Image (cartoon, rainbow, N blue to C red; front, side, top):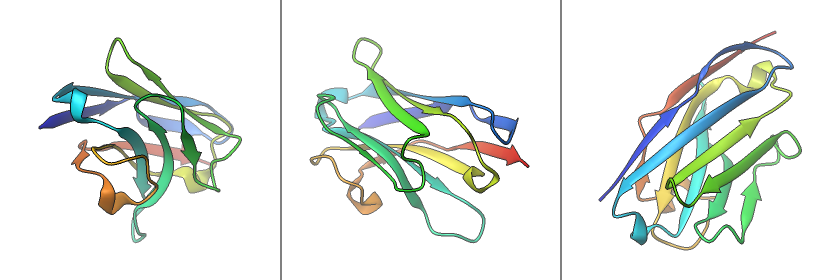
Length: 123
């Protein structure tokens, strides 16, 4: 089992930046990729970004390209999401996820999920 704990959410204004963190523990050697997803009220879960555990491959959702950056710290078994130029439409609960399969943008292929952290962007 892998446990994931997110932190760093909050209330910010449009144009501000925010950095989310996700700490992984447990059987981290089983992880092949880490991802971030988000879900706004009344909407389906949306892919945001993913990075292979080796950090070789990175994917971004179209709506966040050029504004968000995913990174990881091997020593800390952590992954981060740097969010710049935030918009009101970025408001959602953000989830960290880990996959034992190769990197993917499909939420159904992620095996472990954090509890989520709320990000609210006021316009």
